[in-house]
Length: 480
Image (cartoon, rainbow, N blue to C red; front, side, top):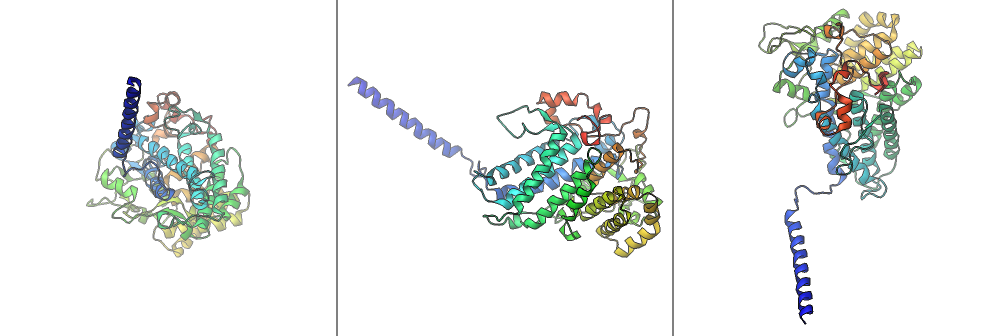
């Protein structure tokens, strides 16, 4: 009898404990932070982060200094301009590094949900969008960093210190994501459209497919030093945007959300107008000079900052005339596609088609900044055609460099490094730090401090950070 009593007491105790644990689980559950979220609620944040936190902030800000679209005249941008600490410090790009991986993890969750066996299996359009955006974000990461953690990354609680993957292998994955994304975007989905929750294309699978083909063209050209495939570039570009209205941009209303370059101007005011860029425009009597630059508000005149040696002072130098609260972030522009086709045709020796694409690119770039098609035609005939006839590829790349001011500075940085690696010194930079006895042009960005301090694999690859001045990434002929 005593044994039965003890047994019953034990069972009651266990039942009571289990009941209390269930109750505590209910109490501790945060209904405002659910552990499982539908993909339609993940995608908006992933798109916003891709545009605002990755494409258009620190990576773009620093790139604009390195390729002389802007001059860093104060704070960390002055340090970048004068090559003091910022280019080699692991804290410089840490915020964007973290955002890059956080966004890739969000996209991985969407891919898992919408793939076979996931709880949204058959949601092919959303799956395709997530795959295309994974390719896009992964390319941004490896293009500036080189080898990065990837195959072992995005596994919290499983692999805490992932190894670095080779950039060559990562690029194979990028093209696979685009291929898979295009295939899935072409399937009939069994789920409702993302609609307004897709801030880029409103859930339009056809436009997302065109964006994916455009990215194929961009990345095929990126590898042109390693494996030139200019016909494939043209084919991919021909499958992409047919008009400006189809380009991939993220827009801001100027009130609830403002353009990153505008926010940076308001919050920091660390940029001045680039003398180097002005010189290139003046050399061609380019009318965009009157649009690109304006004097600092309240200043007596427009003052340009000397590249590499400005005064560290605010409210003296002019500022960008393109910076505005509503200036969009360009994920892939129509004019970039036409420039890609122009370069590919020129390298294949088909100058008539190269010229036709170049004219389209310049026209779109002029209209983008408020000039007219007539302005573009007059400029082309007076200042570009002769230079194109003399050296088609050189003039195409110079026009692309000019057109990418300001929002596309990251792509201008990628182009500059690729061209230098190919021996095409078409764009002359004027910062004396690039040509002194110990040259200091940053050929890449240093890894983020979050992983430098926590992952010995990343720490070993970073060292003292000086490698950024001497080591190209793989697609530019480097080892990593």
